[in-house]
Length: 608
Image 1 (cartoon, rainbow, N blue to C red):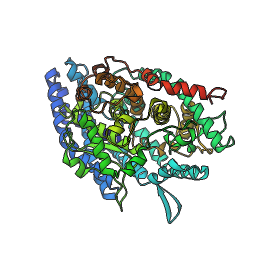
Image 2 (image 1 turned 180 degrees about the horizontal axis):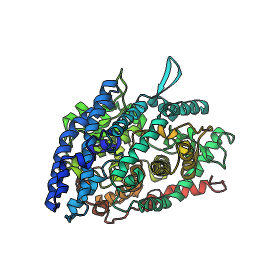
Image 3 (image 1 turned 120 degrees about the horizontal axis):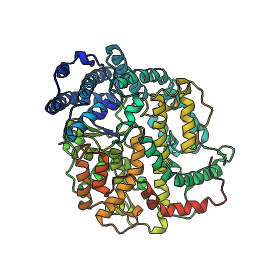
Image 4 (image 1 turned 45 degrees about the vertical axis):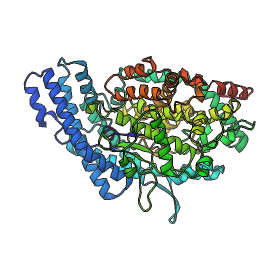
């Protein structure tokens, strides 16, 4: 997860908007005379200066709160976040005054990015905006401090429950933790609903029909066209996903019994090794091929070779160094949070931070010494190197080409964590031959392909909620309807209408758009293929690692340095040679696995 100061505005800090109305702003004087292109440039320079000056302390406050959840840090975080969001919202309103002024393409792009820069826009009414800020802080705190308690003296954090669900094969324990964590989100529903109403008022003041339209307008295409593009991409992946789902359900049914996993219904969500059933890699041991396979056990190798959390991070950094990137600053290791501290509450959700938009790069994680976390570290550093690449762009261009690019870059690097790479860094002694590839590909598919429909449906749900198309009483019902429709996954027990299961997923109470993750899971394979081609790899796509290729690193960095200065289609072309997103590279990457899955599924009843 990427955490720049601009993204703080969009996801964590919502704010007081006293003075946002045009009548109360200093820059309203501009409307008294005919505005010119020079006025627009001067306005953007002021925006850059003012927001940059305030963003640094706001970022530090957000970091302090995320790494030490307490009342005082919450107050400071909320206050500085309010001030930053006040400023952004005020300037977003002012930017609209240049709508009819003839300006160059660069100036127009920055003005448009300014107007759409807030995901949750505070309205001009100070009382409502202040309430919006309070709700945002409350929701973040409720999630971050959430626990499930069996008794007064026996409580479990999300990290502890997730770790148990990853390895447990006891349906009762998994169901208990699944239900327990969703008790944390129930109290969120009332204030989340209130937040939606206030945020929609703010979106209308910026010229959008609602917050749903604001979110969908960020992708260099008409807002109404963007969902169609997502449907097109999902259509390219859906047949492969359905083959994977069919195999996993059949194997789970054999393991647990058809009374627990029926062969003609969606898979119960608590049995897939993940609190949200969004990735299924933890059930690999149940669904793996019957033949003996030599698949590297990275978790075991890390333990045998004495990797601690810092060594895991250092190794991930060395990957980027091999591509020609400069080392991370010493302050990265001095200021990052790599493990969960004793004696205080923190947000363990992995994220990458850029606190000064120059060199104060950090990651925030509660690292567990597993192969999965080894991949996550590579992913998070991908954000940091992206942040540093575009640091010299103007403020409004310090971001990824579209939200999916930021997530995709880290994942693209993780695709190069192949047996070849593991041998190069000494984690394994020999590279398994191609006869073992089915196991490796299945592991990757259980994490990445299983995720794609989840990545799509979260914002399918939110767009309807934010557009006011459904009532709060329908929130939970729609959530599970979409999960069954796209994922073929169902709640393991009947869910009441007053439940708020969406809030059990971090990105919902944090107001972080989830479409970025769907796009990232498409783009990473497209980027991987392009970089492997540039590196001159002659191996099959799924066996390629760009580790050590400075040529690939140079091409990657050239795209990263563009930031958000051009439409994402141009950034795409710069790296891949095509302006279009294309999920067909997934078919190429997993081609051997698809043949194997089709053979396994012969005679099975697929679908749900």
